[in-house]
Image 1 (spheres, rainbow, N blue to C red):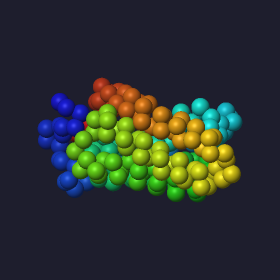
Image 2: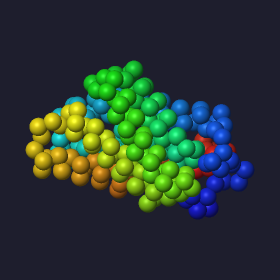
Image 3: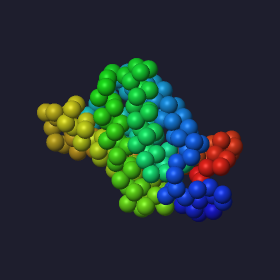
Amino acid sequence: MSAHAAAPGVASPAGRWRTRDIVVTAVIGAAFGVFMAGLNAVYAGLGAGAGSPWLLLYLGWLLPAVLAPVVVRRAGAGLFAELVAASVSVLVVSQWGPDALLSGFLQGIGAEAVFAAFRYRRFDAPVVALAGAASALLAFVHDAVIYYQGVAPEILALTLFWMILSAAVLMPLVTFAIVRGLREAGALRGLPA
């Protein structure tokens, strides 16, 4: 089966959301929200910041926006999962506070824009890489405005480099590894991924 073909008996992306799609997307978001809370602590503990190669970890915050659409193949899945994840991370613990919700919204919108450009019909590695990059780009704009005011342009460029590298190169690898693991565990029965 190709990376973008729907499984037999599974509704197309243009179809209505099923209860299963909502639950799976919410679970992806909630699981990554807990993961993000831990990632926040690791990131702070590393003393990571603008220009740091530790920004390769950024894909951890972007994953729900890309993984959920790949799994359920529904318009809005990336935004929904990313907002759930951001909400859970804020509730668990987050040094970013409610601003994580704005960041999650922008990250979700970035990924959604790419999947929408392909009419929610392609979920292969190049599209996942583009969705990750778009998500990272909007996250970068957010972070540059909120957190990186006064940072030297060359450090901002390095920051963007690490974020895009994380999202465009590592994202497809991690996304498809997770999908493969979930499929092998039988967790994706009845889903198009």
